[in-house]
Image 1 (cartoon, rainbow, N blue to C red):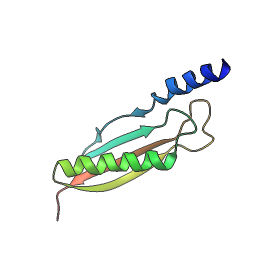
Image 2: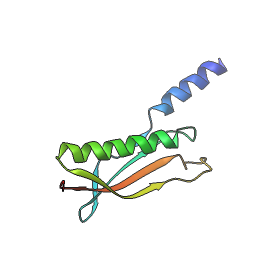
Image 3: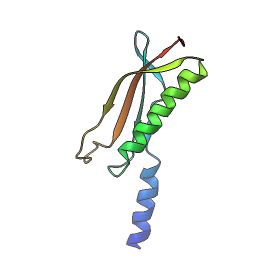
Length: 95
C-alpha cells in the first residue's frame, strides 16, 4: 500500500515541471527558463532543453541565436530550490 501511495505521489509531482516559454526580458533580450519538478531533475537536461527552445525560437524567425547569459540554480536542491536553467538571449540577423 505504501508503495502504491509513493508511486502515485511521484507521478503527480512529475507533471509539475515548469517551462516559461520565450518571453521578452528587456530591450531586445529574451528569456526562457526550464525548472525541474523535483530536486532529482537533471540540471544538464534542463539547460539543454532551454537552449534548444531558445535556438528554435530564433530559427523560426530566420535569425541566429546569440547567448547573453545562462543562469542556473545552485545545490542543495531541497525545499523548493529545484534545478533550473534560464537562458537570456538575442535573436540577431545573420551576417
